[in-house]
Length: 282
Image 1 (tube, rainbow, N blue to C red):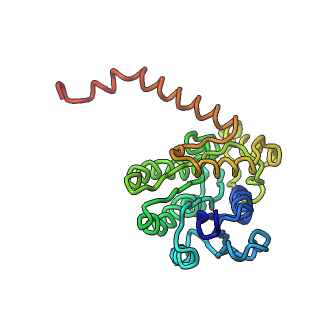
Image 2: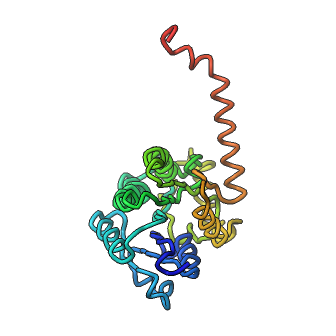
Image 3: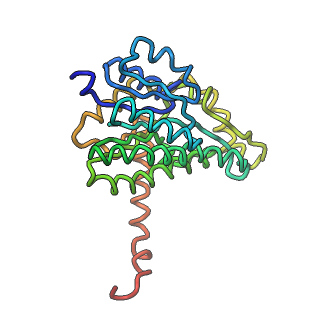
């Protein structure tokens, strides 16, 4: 594979975490790569020695003008975009009752609305190519609302539902969509990308309050390896039929399958009541 025939990746949030590890692996393979961060100077170590195959861009996905500029710059440099990895985002923890309006909206701007906006900017390029793969970094929280993470879970649930619709719309156009749902991974997420509103209402101390305290305490001890996660993301892009969902880590797989089975059991338990709400003989 020559440089000009290699896939073009566009990865957001490359300064740390999953985005950083994925970008390192993709660049090391010699593939053309657009790497972004709110401050592109933090990406210098990634692109050093790879000037011919990389493009570093300032990108805050909550700023529409930067989103449009980044999409245009990527197309101008490489002529196409084969894989879009929507990785930028962060966590916000609070009890539902104690959530702060400004922080809730900022969470959605980054995790959901920014992701939507960048994808809209890239889709015309992929439609023109009749090919592409959109990979959205979701979370186990895209399936499960853990205590203390209601607003984070809501932002990831939004990405999951939106991705279902996107996949149905673009499949006939040769474009694939995958949500990657990690469980706990050693990315220092709690230390660098987590914001909290402390729990002060005693009634929640044993549920959400305990989880808020334990999240930071467990940082650096998570079982998930971000480099192996990045390898898994690369692997699905090389599949003819990539998964719609890729749950990462034993904790994530166990938690998601348990949740989905419980949901199916509950639907079956209440099936007759649900069916009885249709008009007779409809």
